[in-house]
Image (cartoon, rainbow, N blue to C red; front, side, top):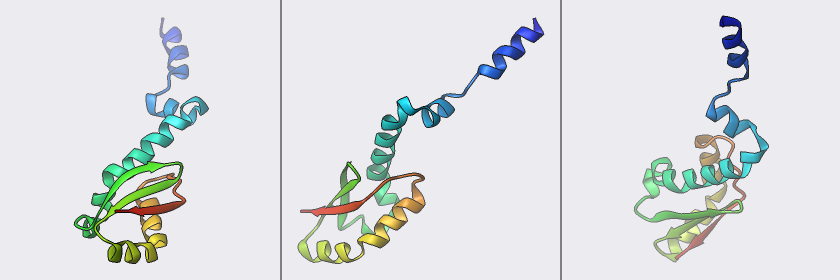
Length: 102
């Protein structure tokens, strides 16, 4: 009986291992990470929470609702720094650009 248990133990994999290593779940994991960006945006950028809000993330594009055109212009200039900070806070996220909407 102990040998039988050891055989099963070698084939056992955790759910996280399956989700993050199996290609079949790659799209699901990617969508979850995109949603994490939207949910955690104000946590990552507390200083921007009064003027902007992450609305959605789709196909590598983060959509931010911005208070007015002045802030939209300012944040557009800082887009590279914002993307960099998001990538530092959320592992393996693929973000290409930010679209600012009113």
